Image (cartoon, rainbow, N blue to C red; front, side):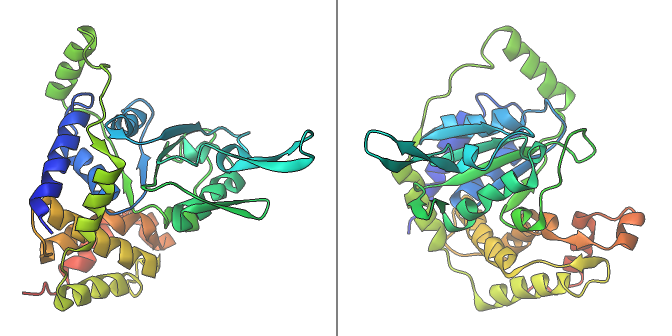
Length: 313
């Protein structure tokens, strides 16, 4: 593989997104890493910080099909996956696919809809197919779900079940812009350039090729062992009641490979594993009641774990 080829595509994609998103270079990097690692991303933050704009900017930068699902309390599973309708002319049922049958699917305010509807995305996110009236429909490649949610303290929200949280490779926060970025954003808003249309700079074939380059990145056996020890340590940590799953380990390894491509390498180093762990594991960990009472966070507990694990040479 030639990691420089993928790096050129990464730079082109990031530069295009930054035309509309101000001061979030690090966050854009993580979103692109998830795209290349075949992962799904959940953005959690207060309303108005740009969660939807960031997801839409990524979609507009790719020559892929895109759909947006605005989740509300009355959104039904069929509104996401599709339904089967009786055709009186042919006297038979016809499957009408839902918005999930697109390359990039934005599930906006996912935690405002009911758990039953939230679970409609589970099969699609894991198996990349949906089932309607017993008929399996394969989703297009590449496929990525970007979910957004408001903090649970916000009125009218339902917590996402652990099974669905585990299917998101990353849970990211946008955060408020700094003063300089806010001034730059305000200036671009007033002169009308903030909402300029973003042209597609990469095709589906480009993304699939970059994903293949990620899969070809080498990971030394010592680094695989390092990743396994990190995951297993989350299952024995006293402050954690439910540790990381086997799926979390696989997500972490693929994410580490994507980090290597970002650095124009065809092999992983320990920092790739550690960075990937910090992105893919925290939202999958369930803390004990005592840890929550002590104001511990998943990130803080994971950092304590990794600090006590010897980094391979």
